[in-house]
Length: 62
Image (cartoon, rainbow, N blue to C red; front, side, top):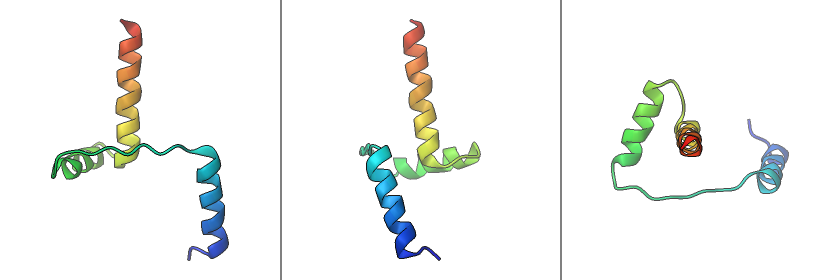
């Protein structure tokens, strides 16, 4: 079970160590992205982060 203390510790960590990025996609695309990520053996957030990192790496090689 997720205790109140655990929740508070998680919230503190996120506040001090993580940024949030929020973006919108057309209806249905989120599910398509999620399904593809899962077919590749990962969750949506790490899949998106990896895609961004790969794009940055390609752009830096130009």
